Image 1 (cartoon, rainbow, N blue to C red):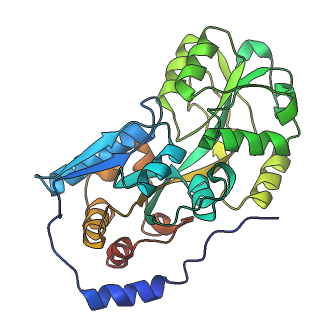
Image 2 (cartoon, helix red, strand yellow):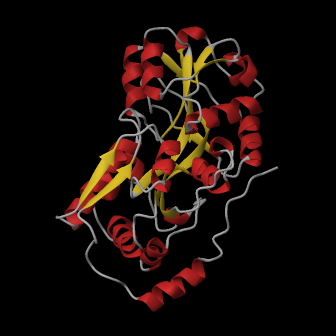
Image 3 (cartoon, helix red, strand yellow):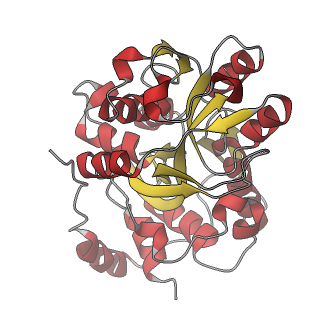
Length: 318
């Protein structure tokens, strides 16, 4: 059965409440905040640095500390426990969190709220060219890194390869992206799956050292996955994203979103959203993945309830 997002039916009411409560203060309530990102080999960490730079320009006395983490699952747990104020997460993992599904084992996380949808992340299947792997079916019998267990990449890999009916035939290697690339460079694994924005700098570096190929997700597999899970969308990896990649590759994508936890009050959330997304700044220039954000895209595919402060800020954006 196709899974569905939570309806954002309360948004009009939130706007009314925002109007009743006024705009709040014009300064942040604290001087230090923390955002959970991901590993330095991924895209989340530099995105966090870009967000921190913009906020520092807007609020000179405020620091946004960047926390390196294992990724979306850990980030949501940190938010739940009040150990960080904001986090970058995959929208599919946020869906599992609020529903208490998959890696959350019935333990719903209900004290988080959405700030903005940032950019698409593509499920990338990278193999050593010498293996001759051309299609998903060819992965059978090969050593393929599928991410750490219970990571976002792990569930993407499991869902995709299950749809392709090769999950049970793959020799799973439970490695994070950084370790997977090291193992592949040394020839100890045949490939890896990694969900990331395009282009991923670590894959670029790897492709300069080892001949690699990207495995396409066949159109019928794309359709099956999109039909089964509402957080996937058809995608393409344009030619020349990576060294030696001369043709476009069919793929699927999810979205990276910015969410906050109970430690970020409504007015702070409003000010942060307003500064990051509600007025001209250099955020879109700070990282290639942020260059295509629009007013409409900022609230699309958001599987958690948009926060009151964030909604108020978005509603004021021309």
